[in-house]
Image (cartoon, rainbow, N blue to C red; front, side):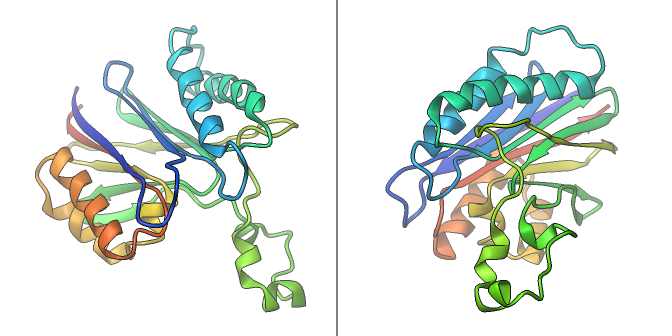
Length: 231
């Protein structure tokens, strides 16, 4: 297997602090992003604690990949709790054999580009995607932004419940992990064009961050891109 990757984060143009963090571990083939929950004190510290806990825990014994990722998420959750009320989204991806395994909480996203076609692998954990929420309620109709509120995250009391996703990989696939400072700023068609046009992970990630900033840079912007050259 041969894999190339690159990661970059930028504070953006509106935020006083960068609360995004990323994971780009080619040795363990472990990648991902964490985004300190906006509006909560110490969100950046919670994101930092979560990512540090993961990098410190990669030596733990792998039973199944799903169980290993869940354990990493639980370790991240325990560390992030130390920075309450801070909290963070968390998106982890691990490549094993010919598959990508994801553990996901929040609205950071993972995309797959295959044969120049972009597919979003994760769904945002937000009220707008919760089938139990009555979206016709007058509260949401008058305040549609409330539907963006997260339903899963890391770092608050209670059980942590990551969504686990498995995706078969093919040679020449490209995988993007990003925070909402990228996905909210760049339309899907533009994401697809950038992911299809660049030949190196570094130039691709730089192009994504540059595009997010050109479109306003309203939030911290973080991207990790992985190229699958061979399996």
